[in-house]
Length: 256
Image (tube, rainbow, N blue to C red; front, side, top):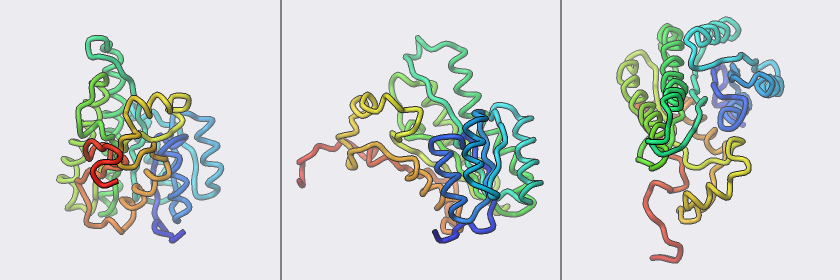
């Protein structure tokens, strides 16, 4: 490892599993201290324990502004600063719009959109005083293109994309960068037992890179955006989807 995050502190949501966990582990390996946050207390504590003195666990429901304030205060008090925010926590639900309930819609929006909004608002005072910071919001390729059968989920991820760009314009002069990551189909614990269905339904075999992505690959992109290597990047949408949104691909045509 190259210590690309030496001296930096990160607060990561959804860090008990999947992309949030992979990002937390990579960040510590690269020299950072990490505030591991999640609603899954048992798993979150296990992840933090693996990080040793460079990490600890804080329970956090991203829908709660009060819990956000408590998480930010502890991170600031324990580690002295917050350089990086990874808004990774989120949920996904599907169904035709006429079959969705108002409760399902509200839960998606409160978690995926308001949760990110809460997090940005909570860390901005700290980052503004520092005159530096990198906020990385995990959106989705579904935050760039429409997808039938998941209208509310798509709406929530489009909202994260727009929120990212707007906040980047507001805070850039304070030395704070804000970017979004847009994963395609990533093999995470949420997908366990359904990989074949996802592979077939999304026609992953027709992608330029015909496989599911890995959580550690998302973490590597987050590392770039968290580090000084991306010092001129803000308000941008970084797609990491194996070429899924690049366009249709047919094996054997026209070059194979």
